[in-house]
Length: 200
Image (cartoon, rainbow, N blue to C red):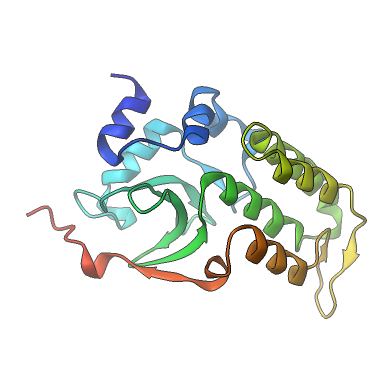
């Protein structure tokens, strides 16, 4: 059985874009990692994390949730595959709504990255935005074009902050609301209280 088939046996049919990224080796390619903010899980590591109780999944895992990668070594980026294929940020018993699709997830990660960083990281941030935009080119060309355009923006000081930005945080919020929906700005979901993960 192929790796993709094994994953789909667990959580159902994967989004076409994520299937293609697995086939193209994106999770293993360091160009698409975003520091500690997004460390992709290779599919085999995702399968291990899916059932490990020490990362909060319980013995059987939460139905339909697939770990895409880690965030700051404390939380998990997860594909909520049986609830519209949205992406959530899962930590403990709580999950934050982040994007309605895997493509939207990468758009928002690029935008969040561009909204605050140290000045000496500017070229690295630009490069990461361009790399992520390349993953969106086939299915979300307008988003890919937008990221390439934003990557060329001048570095801006952020009022009252020690960091700089290519895209001011308030502009990121407007783009997220317009492209992904207002519920992805601060929406939260409860999982474990309603799901039996005891394995019994």
